[in-house]
Amino acid sequence: MEGIVHKPRSCHSHLDILNTSQGNLAADVESNSAGSGLPIGYRGCSSVGQDSVEGTTPSQARKRQLEAASTGDFLPAKRTRLAERISPAILVWQRQINSDRNRNVEADTDVNDNTNKIEQDQAQLTRRNLALFNKMTTEEGTGDALESALLESTGQTTTTKMKSTSTTRSGFAIAAYQNGILPLYHSKPPTNLNERHKRASSSRGTASPTVSEYERYVRTLPMAFNELARGNKVSRKLQKDYDDDESYHPAFNQPFTGFPKNVGLNNGLSPPQPDFIEGLGIVEFQPFPIEHVSGAVLYKDNPLSTVLPHIAGEYKGPTGCMENARLQCSYDGAALVYARNKALVLIGKPDPLGHAKITTFATDGNTIEFFAHYVARGDDGKLKYHQYRIGSCFLTSSHCGFKDGWRQLQNQQDYAREQSYALRDQLVNYWVAREGIASSTPISSRIENLNDSRLEPWDKTRTGLQEGVREDLEGIEMGNTNWP
Image 1: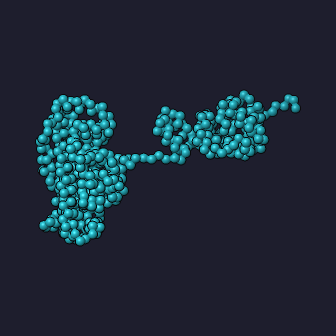
Image 2: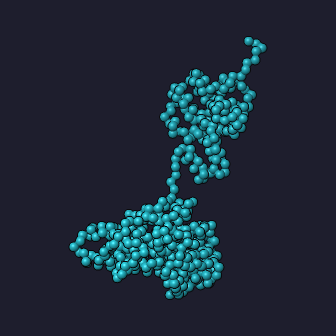
Image 3: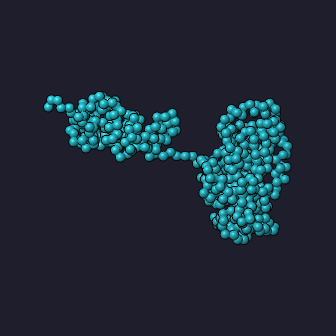
């Protein structure tokens, strides 16, 4: 009829698409893809509707599409604002994510299959999709952040390293304290403190670093801009190497996978993982069955594992926190104390009360601190692991400070090495004597006897061979043990 103005037809809904013919649907999809610049999955107006609404701005078209697709998602005003921000890129992104779901969709499928494909290709306008899209299209949405966003959208997860944190995560300090690991300001000096001070300050048999070596260290230290580089710098310039001793070797940044779980000091915590340790190999303890001493063998299923080390170190980079390094040292030292005492208790020769034979150090290249570790029972009757500072040096303030740090560190290394060999000899000699006394007893039975030993309370002493103190480091039942 002439003179009658026809109102533009509204956009077709999902039900309208289902009622169209397959040919019209294909034409719609083709029109969306080729004519409008939108991806194939975009659900806009049909071809008929497009002919009727020529002159409609892209903003109005997107607004109408928003109202048809997600009427219940947001208020009308907010839907309009979000529609202005949406772009075809999010549809391409969503189609890429869902491509694995559409692999089996063939070009000659029926109308319902094509409609389902369109439904899957289209990105739903939700807060989550908008936030993810914004994250991907901003400067921050690159690299690891972009990878993380994509993994979140597909339900995938990433793996993390074990060092993660444990000692660096929030809450570790209070957890360690609840396990009996005391902070520096609560720890008491060991009873052999004078011995430790005297040994640390003793002169070296080799020449001290020269002034030129000190100046070169100060100039090049800033170039060691991370933790690994600082550790390498300190180990090369200050630490002693024992290349001539093939039985005694270092290990770096390895978690104590062989350390028992939940023995008190590590309840609910990841295994210790110091940046540096140094000790004897497992073969050096033969014929003693060292693998049956709790906490002695540090690395599980490793025939070359370090056994019963007496020194551990923590390195920090220029932006690292020395307070965290001290906390890590307290945990490392407690684990080494635990293993040493377990070994000594088994042979009936525990350390005297309050004696500290374990050493740790913490350094960021500018300063270095040394700590002695031991265990004692607190007023509440529970084991308390003490960490007492026995030395500190400013490495970059003067040549004298640099030499002092070099001397103390190497003296502490020598002291730890001596303790490792002394403990090894005690264990091996004990086992050889035990085999001679009980040669008729099968070895397997003797190993079982070691595991079934009962320990005496901390405040009881014995005379003769068994003089000293026995402690229960695993909370097992106390009792007397007859040792050969």
